[in-house]
Image (tube, rainbow, N blue to C red; front, side):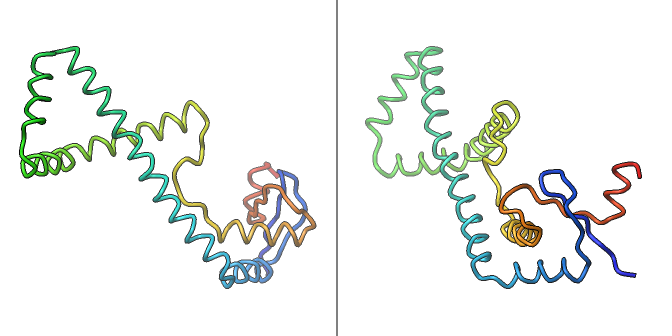
Length: 167
């Protein structure tokens, strides 16, 4: 008995493919070097986006932290600025290293909170994360097989789709 996969394009059932056909679509996408390059660039740019967001979050946090500290205790803030101005380069270097190692986890937490806020309230669904280029290529191959040049392709085992529709 051959298992079949139902194919939906934009939530419309357009047909079915056998296990062998589906395996051929998967194998074709896995053997294409362009898909590997797309996947590698997706992972690379995910890291770049995370680092970029981290570098944007850190100065903003530092600025508002200094403003809060200035408003809270102006004399201590000015004495701290004066101590930084008069410090030796070695003391500044060790102070910056201490600051980065102590407060980096806090910046990562702030970055994750910002990601959640953008995802939850502003609808930026794909701010961080890799795309699965292999799944995209497989869906594009299946969609092309059924004559669709674009659209959301969903492939489900036949018993899954019939159970979800109550049949």
